[in-house]
Length: 180
Image 1 (cartoon, rainbow, N blue to C red):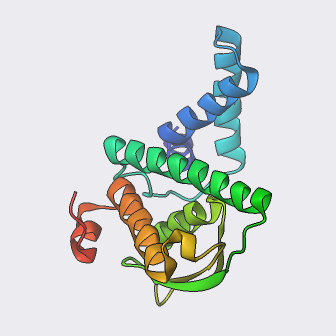
Image 2: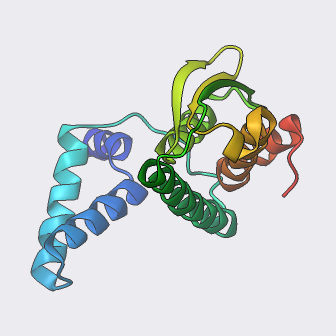
């Protein structure tokens, strides 16, 4: 019995089970006992058959900072989409450019989330990410309208700071000089 318990404890995670259950419930758009039971069984089956390595990525998640991160991100996406659409519709001249951003943290997870969120905002795309140096290069649409090179750097570093505040450990925040 102890071998079975050890096997299950290595593969099963309460947070992953809940997350998969939420996705299953959203997929069926119903909240009834049969959907919940089948979702629970599917979540357990997926974790047993396709185990993921343990990650402490969300161990330091701060709800308030996470909501701020999501809210600012959504506002940025809408503003950027409106800007790109207006430039395209009006036919206004614009200049693109590539900007180097030196991030404060070179942790894989922080860089990945920061780069992904910057990449999802219309008008910016990550062209290169140098993990060891903690550097990302962005191609920026209509560089001057975004405050030039320094405006893009400031916006990108502010995005990284929000990611750090929402997800990083207290030790990491102290190391990179970010205060909550």
